Length: 203
Image (tube, rainbow, N blue to C red; front, side):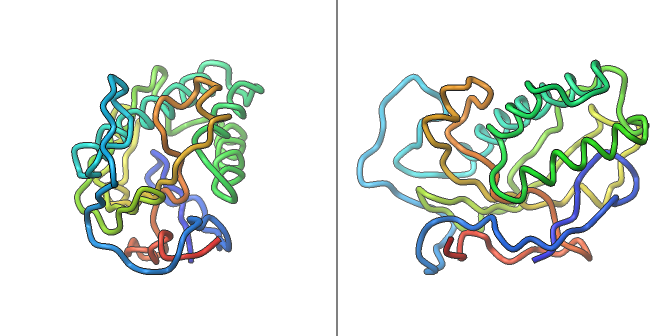
């Protein structure tokens, strides 16, 4: 499964072959909605609801976009990858995807961060299609607007895919990820086509 980077530059910087990043569950495909046995009544906006729908996933994505925006602003303002950035990235990404994000920021820093605004805002990710949904994994097609982040935006990067898995308690304790989810997949494959559903892969 190929995963291409999704930055603000007008060109795709790299593509890597991922062998990991799978959810930990069976391979049975699910439809575009998941119902939990018991709903959760809480003031936490990211608590997993009885039915995981687009409204909830969009709320989670907004929280993740804010957390990623905080990372971007630290990198741009310090022009470095301080330990806090690494800790914040670890709270958002798992497996090979985490190292890819670190490598991409390192590459962009080496190039002088030409694609970023001086004071970048947050990217905006909105669900266009829920593909697989279960309490342990969400896979969705999203529309991603990065105009608040970069000086140049490639319109081909607007259509992307994300896979989310529940974050463990240690991640939640860091305070760097306000949601209950982390990225298993975030981007697109070569040709800008839909990747294989990560939620169908066993760990």
